[in-house]
Length: 158
Image (cartoon, rainbow, N blue to C red; front, side):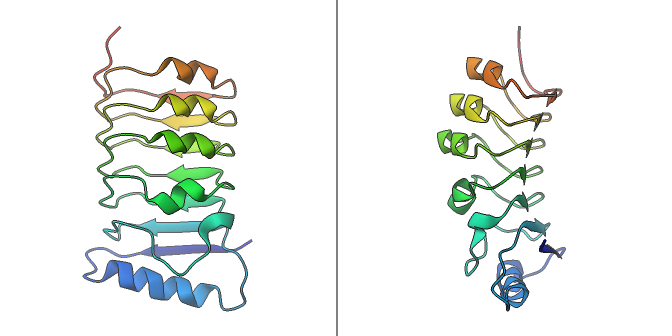
């Protein structure tokens, strides 16, 4: 199992630093399974890696206002951490990440969720607290494996 964690606070060239560090990880050509890019002020995922085999991705505490397209093609993802970003909505293609069990979207600016959230049949933990959600799509009721759902500190009304 391969794991990498790259952290930096206030790095002026965070994206370049992250990309160069990920180049060093794969000298043997092995696929990366867990990847944590924390507090790097990224706006996209560093290129040059095959992210499709990744099973855990931590993009928390970035400046992301949307989910990077590369993430939406990571079909093997089991855990996705996107907390403490600037996300406003959850795109419909999120429904293609059918292996997700943990989805951390807390501490963003989400105002709505795509009904495609209901396609995440394996999802067990969904963190939506500290957002700006006013309602939830009916499809959230399709999440039969869901064990924990965090909704506090939103603008939800009955």
